[in-house]
Length: 368
Length: 219
Image (cartoon, rainbow over all chains, first blue to last red; front, side, top):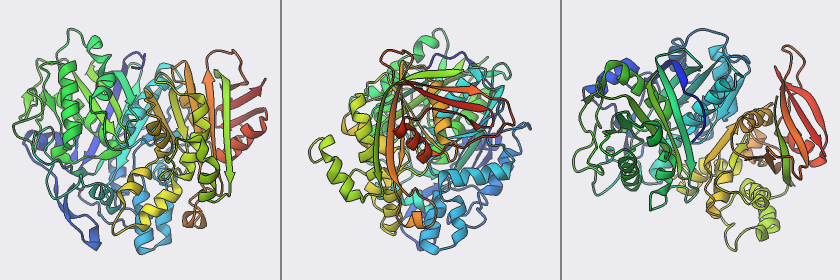
């Protein structure tokens, strides 16, 4: 676990298939799902798979990108300052960036798709569209990417190398990535049921974008206990004894001593990872209610850590946490919360994400 | 000023070599029959990482602008029947993961960074802010095929790995980032130029971004 002082979260917001964090929280509290069947290869057809697309985002890539106006809408809510300058750097995180445009170019042609076709070309286009300066650092570590961005941003703030840092994350679903997960046979016709003990596992995918502004002293919530662990056991499987999950969580209970905590897990809907994750969380935080929101939003991939942080923050402010939509008993943990619950008696939430390669990430979000 | 001591440096320069030739040349650095599915970048990077004998407490910072170019090309060309193997191997940090998974080397902190003209300096900043006693800064690129023709890939294959320590014992050199006065002229240092600099063990002292000066001194 990283030895850092608590870092304040002075602003934070998200965009999902439901809208901003307020609309998304309301939908989740109402038990709604944004997932709908979509042909996995888009205009080229294929099996129907559960995907949650933001209104206005075309699944098959367009030019100009249909997701760019969505990022502009989200970015309009970021407190205005000279982002991308040395004292106010930007950290961008994701996993697919514009590679969907590479897929579009290869399948259908259109040289202009290449303007977005690599991570750095894509981020340069986004930075230009949002008016950022050149101080932009980009992390790409699949579905724990956002956690890396938060940790690096926290280090910049703690070392007084920045006054505030903008962490910005986005991942929009396309045939490129859905085709990959479908080929791995974890994205199929079934809808996800995170942490539910059932015969077959499955995930859904969803669009997601989010931002957070980290500072030393502004904001009513703080992040602490940021932890990472990389098993390097297998590309798409965890150590069967669950020690990777346990190693990542190891230092957190001590930080939370005396506090009542709830758990926003990763919970994509795959069986083995869900079982191991639920067991590790239950062992580290006995009795703490566990939720996953990917049964409603889909897995927002490289943005999920930041999207779900923004939703956890909104839940803390609203005083009510959504349950695990899409799942039913029996679950992998007796602490799995299927229905919304009141947060008045809780002091903090532990947010976790996992990724390819047995990568694990966790952090604590609590009132300052 | 942020600084660390360079306690090990390993380089692999495959230049414009064919991927099969690289595999044949480097296969003895890896366990028998383990290289069949490894990428050219994975092979080169693995050759530089192996002598460092990574341990769990090491932090690994990995820099690549284009990462698994040939695998990405193959994955795209596998549609409409996308290859699951090429999909998982095409992800950005795959070159590191291929090697650490092969050797079952867990690491607590792993930061894959991407970027362009100032990527090595950005990755170095990430490395210098880490609190691990030893940080391994590694990176590389892989010569592209059709993506190179479109200007979206590297034109050469290479990999590097530096062990950065807080202790000067047996140091090969020192690497530092200093705050530079704003608005000065900067000299971008992309991946290939950084690799050439390491290969020649050339001292370096220049502003590499708006407000950061990179210094490398060799013993």
